[in-house]
Image (cartoon, rainbow, N blue to C red; front, side):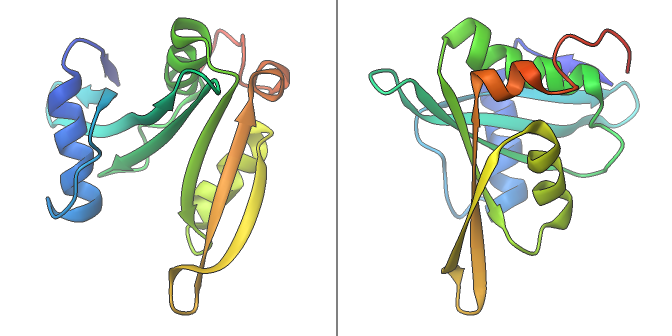
Length: 146
C-alpha cells in the first residue's frame, strides 16, 4: 500500500463520495490516502474540524477494501495530527454497528462514548477520543514492522 501524501484534495473528495455519495462535504480539510498501483486510491483519512486553540482535530475515513490498514499506515495516519499539527486529541465518530471501527479505536487506547439515537433512530454513535499519551502508549506507536 502506497501512502498518498501530496494530493489531499482528491483524497478528501474520495472519502466524501465514499461516505455520502457526494451529498455532503467536510468543509476545510486535508487528507492522506492509500493506493495500490493496480487500483489507485483505495482508502483515505480526512482531518477536519481542526481547533488549534483547543488542540483537537477530527478524523474520518473511508476504504473500498479492508487490507489497507496496517501498523505502518496507522503510524502515518496519527503522525500528522500528533507530530506535525501538534494536537492533544484526535476525535472520530462512527456507528455503534461499525464493529471494526469500535475494535480498532479500543485497541488504539481511545475512550469511546456511546451516544444513543444521535446517528439515526435506533442507532447510536460512538465518539472516540484518542489523546497523545494513549497513542504513544499503544502497541502501534513506534513499531517498525507491519
